[in-house]
Image (cartoon, rainbow, N blue to C red):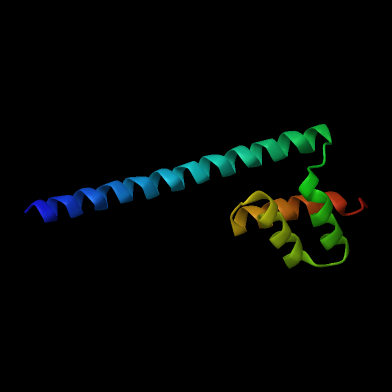
Length: 94
């Protein structure tokens, strides 16, 4: 019985740890998006954007997303959204 209780406790602790990790990642992603919006509003280019912009100007969107993910650690979806925002700022108006 002690072995089963120990395994159960370990499983519960592991589950809680994974849940906390997912929650922290979600909070970090939300904070990153907010910071991106503030920096966009202030006209401040993040250092990662220079590499992303080079890829976008060469028509290499996939590489731009990869570079963004590598620099920021964001998820694929978040990186794609950020790269799309950066790309929309590069397009000439009119």
